[in-house]
Length: 288
Ligand SMILES: C[S@@+](CC[C@H](N)C(=O)[O-])C[C@H]1O[C@@H](n2cnc3c(N)ncnc32)[C@H](O)[C@@H]1O
Ligand SMILES: [Zn+2]
Image (cartoon, rainbow, N blue to C red; front, side):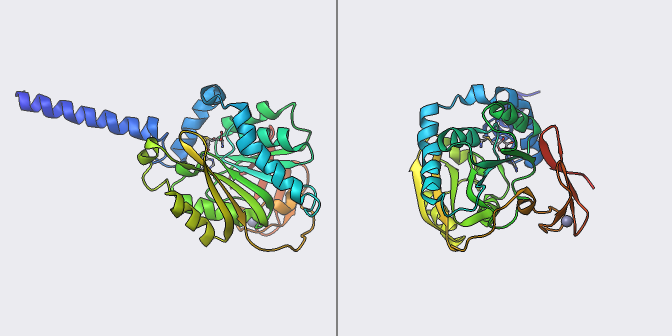
């Protein structure tokens, strides 16, 4: 082969390696679809906490204390029990931090598409959480299987950039938040954020998006090297809804009804018969 051929082959190989690194390493499968992201996190689950090594003091300052303050100011007017959603919960970082900062009366839903990440969350929270205090749900965050206005606090940390349509996810997070409820999100920043075209927001752009979805008091604070912390409050409604139990919170993924028969570890949708069931501590919709 002439020299030019070797040079071209070498350049093509370099480009292929660079694209593969971008797709699989730097963006963790984000542009290959939710299934690939999930498979990569399935494999990463055992190492995730060790690799991230979050500093407990920062976690408490940036996550635990703001949520604890928010709830303390409203506890008397909130219907009990108070439910918090940790969407794309991973190994339970938000839940663990808030539980330690805000006490034991709260109920948490950890939702993630990766079963092994949820199993690690289960292990991390086992012994800290009271029985029945945390519900683990394996599901895609892009369409949340929860009723409108269900959660006084909704979190989604370090995950917006992994879903194909972050705007849709933000819409879902706002939908399931209770009017007057708190949203805590992260937005990717720093040079690496430019590796996520279409998945990151400029600060003003994100604030505008949240306002257009019915949020106010949007505050965006520099936090970690790669992430800003985003807080917002969903506008509206001071009417006191009745206390919610698990059956009022789960929304059927097939027909969007919130109406279930059954108790314990299996719920059956009254409208379409879809089954939502718990196995080894994790709730999933049964494949139909
Ligand atoms: C970087 S981790 C963040 C985990 C946790 N929120 C934290 O801050 O440590 C991203 C998480 O998002 C989850 N995830 C990615 N895409 C998802 C999707 N479409 N639906 C639900 N979870 C998703 C992954 O499985 C992973 O657990
Ligand atoms: Zn249904």
